[in-house]
Image 1 (cartoon, rainbow, N blue to C red):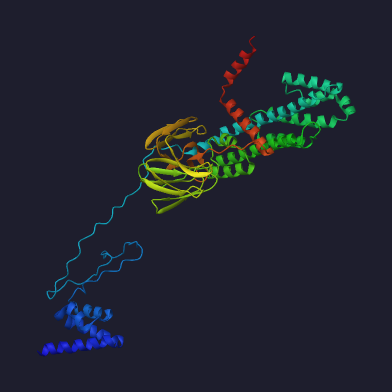
Image 2 (tube, rainbow, N blue to C red):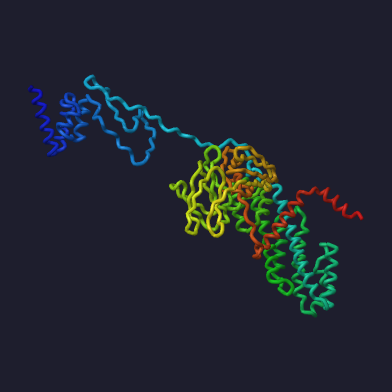
Length: 546
């Protein structure tokens, strides 16, 4: 009876402290009393009914010193507002989040039943598929720019110089052909044509002009014709240089041509024709400089070969064909590489894409929850069927259920719509690759031989995986839209990549017209380098048989 009276007194005191809080030391004293004396006898439930809420600090302090109960039951740890990463601690024992670490319970009160363990969610490791290795493009290029690069560059320069001389000759013959009735110019036209028929570069055009010097002087056009034929002779001198000519001799001959071109007046050639010839002469000079940059980097075995050549090519405005011939491998244009995607294993069920010919972005909603906007040239893969809703641009909302396949956004009759590609055509162009290119298309191994073009027709999304050729086993995975993709080197990574084929610009400006000439000269030089000299001689002799 006395013990019960004592307990009731302590409960009354606890209730008073709850209603009128005192200093923290008093809370600790009451909490310690509860932990050591009261709680083992009455339990937490009776305590809640009798004394109300006791401050947590005091309770924990008393329980910690008493060491008898595992804590108050019925409390659930608060779930964090966002997921937290649990990092390993240096201590050999870790405590799962949401539980308490306590001393073994005594025989006074049994420990509560632990909740059943929860199986953690399964984590998948998304790995790229195994692909066959590709050769290192850096090794190919470093060897090429030292050995074959200068030789091919010389052939390109000589071919371009010969084409410049031919362009001047055509302009001369066109102008002389329009001067019928003038006996002086008619005689010059006849002699000029005879020289062209003989195709004798040793006979300078300036020597031919000596026979007509007096007549041209009397006609007041000697200066115009003299500057023109001098430029043509300077171009012929470059074309006649031997392949073993050093850079100094080549550079001096090119500067002589450029000086002669600046003296051409507009009496025979139009201003645009003179500008194109001047641009072509500058292109020849840039080709010499590019070749020397590549040779120096190759001799030094520089790893930044591709980056520096891409920088020089952009500055010189050289066509892609010229750079391919210089390096032995093709460089993709900046921003033209396909996207490297962290794709799960297999092929996505659905791919939606907006072709580059679309001029504006398209926005739509999947399953009334996920809003997506695609810019021209972008795509999005989905792993299951979806209901796609969108406004067609004329105030009408359309909804489609899309399942497995490739879908593209189109503008049909001035409104947006969605079309399925029942056949996906993909071309892998390895015509600029000097080695085999190994890749997977939808998991199937493929090999594009050097200089070949591979064509694939699929009935759904097209996934391509390939080794970068860096020697470290790194690969690239991507989804591609229907179209042509060129195998080339990415200057930023120095590894193989797939590049979207650039659209050829129309030959409108002076620079573009000159680049068209330069491009044809590169192809001409490449064809010449592939011809066996003995075979070419036989073909020339066969042409002489009547």
